[in-house]
Image (cartoon, rainbow, N blue to C red; front, side, top):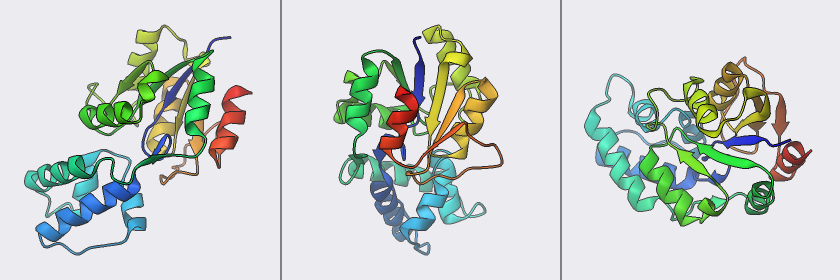
Length: 209
């Protein structure tokens, strides 16, 4: 039976956190805000760039110029330290032989597109989308509905795979099976996934099983 695998990008396929953290610290230094460690950045990611910067500077302090500056910094740092998780390329290569792979990120499409192409992931992935590709973004199920419509799959034959509650909530609400990648840097909410993968090896067993 054919399946549709919808992957998150950051913390699921790619370990991007170091470049995000460095760019965020450059932004905080420029605007004279207090710095914090990478573990705090991990807690702040997952809901798109605007929310990340807003959390970093404080909701009451946030201005559009902070987001714009961060985006400029991050574009310059986008692939300095970012890398594929161990075993991920082999996994995607194997899955591509029998299944359809899509990426759905809350990162903006332009940055998602650069990363997909930089790492030659377009060899394996049929479509990729960012947080601004649809009218709503995860945790809304709307992007998954649109992807199902585009690809012709039913929710029962689809999987949403990611490292954050946004992925799991989005997948559950759309009727897809869900896989939480605990090796990433996101977190779960009260909505529980169907599967948990502590490594890409475990993810391989879940998806190919």
